[in-house]
Image (tube, rainbow, N blue to C red):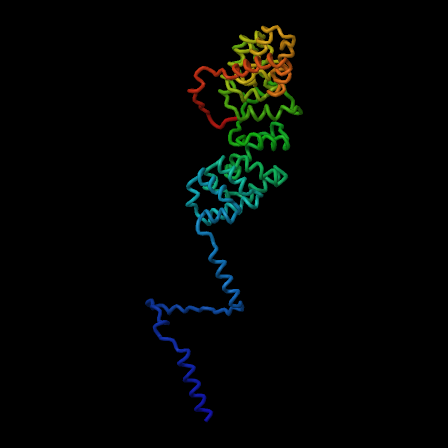
Length: 383
């Protein structure tokens, strides 16, 4: 009885677990043994609810770049700005895009910062930012000290993550340190002038320019002199020096002026020439006045210098008691618009003040000849 029962069980077991032979038939290679595949089976201990939840998580994987940006924290408005500036981001590789955004998150950079970065460097997310990333990050941590400062520097110049690390970044930083720019000053320059790294070059001629300024390494102006000369082309510096020489300045006077007011190196030849012509022709002042008052070269000719000088002449012609002459003129040219009007226009009776305001407004409305048809041609990255 027991043997019959065992036979029945054995027969049912074979029927239940029998598998057709063709499912295990493998192609035989001549002279070789058949390949045997072993598969392992694992039993899940998750409940049905947990399995359904896991299935839902799989379904929420981003299908396109829009969802990637949304999950990263971008608003619809920010996504729109990104696509307007860089339309190809719509079809970006999702995996690569997620990887790059995760890198930016680790650096403390968020969605508003990304919009600024793409506006500045539209192709940024199309570039490799993981090349030498760990080594680059350690170097920047040592340089910037604070993570917040590093993030700010990257937002100002996203190319810090794409420049050639060994051939561009490290040599440029080493040059400034060798010249004597301390780390604190170098950080402030990297933040204020983002393109300092790729544009820096020093040679004997530029080092001679720095020496001619007569500025010491302890001076607050030293970092500005060094960085502005470092990023300027030789031809540009020569043109600006030659332009000032036309007005009777010696070589020593020019470089001494650069040492005291380095930002003169950022002014165009045309602007300096127009301001100097006005100072000599209309204001009847000697050229040497700019050595004492460099701001005269920075001031806007159409909005500040000309209208205020003409107003001073108008007040003189009207014989008013309050005159704008001598040192008072220099103070008047440096005032804000509101303070200038309160000090020299609104202090008069209403009828006189109205006349002066009308004259001053018309003087500010005088446009430069052919200003409307002027084309702004920038050579390289603007200062």
